[in-house]
Image 1 (cartoon, rainbow, N blue to C red):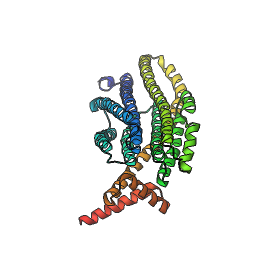
Image 2: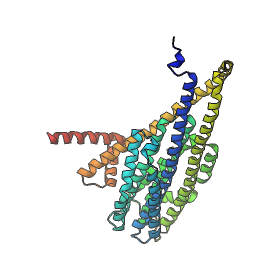
Image 3: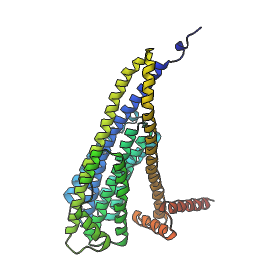
Image 4: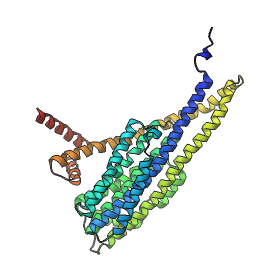
Length: 398
């Protein structure tokens, strides 16, 4: 009679296989962590280029010409490094991640056209800001997709914290660009003022999510260096409540300088977040090796008592981790839902741009006005518009 061990792997083999799979996942995450680090550098330089280009356009080419060219060169350098890391075979990327990467690469390929339009003064500051923001949005959309294969609450929490933080930082960058536009022009329209308010209000939920999940050290650093200071708050009040006094652009440069300093502080915190994530991966890889050595006790008859003791010690921890992972999964699902809603709104904007001869900013304001008139969320209006558009196209074909 054939022994069962001759035909099927035993407990030791399964334990070793589980360790091997876990180690491969951690090594994969380490590779993705390096990708996130490169992506964050690229996003930061794009935020710099967007800000410098905004000031340059608003001042009709008088200000920030050297900064605009320098930041564009740095974006190209970071983009080359980012592209070199996109090896599908090495990353073993899931379809969803591949699609996000494809969208990000496509948006980067549009940068030369945008820069030519800038140099020719054939694009206004508001449209240029929107186009830069779209590139950044596609890049940031990659990060939540990396979390799908993570079953460790500590790692999942750090990645969600990082994504929330980067979203908040991007809203700070957009606030800088919109405020610079109004202060350089010497006036804030109602629409521009509302956009500015939306960016300011949107920062808090993002940073709250980050603060909930990050370490005590980074919480302290954020409270000390990441919040808007008194001078920024004073300029915010001017921008959001009244028109700035004529000052030959001094308020615009002061606003831009203060917000740039804040973004640099946030960038330092962002690097610390990424370092903590990578350190956690390295620690888990070391623990994995130690556990593999401990697995040798499984073939010892005396190990049953040890396993029973470990079960009693680990079961509460496993349950706690399961609850934490469930909460993190819910938070990530909310973030992904926000991204999907943005995609629907972008499609609705494209319909308005194609059929109503609007630019992107006008289409966004049109959707927003319809939502306010109907007392509905913008996503509901966007979905209704896409449904009507689909019906109209179907009727046109018949």
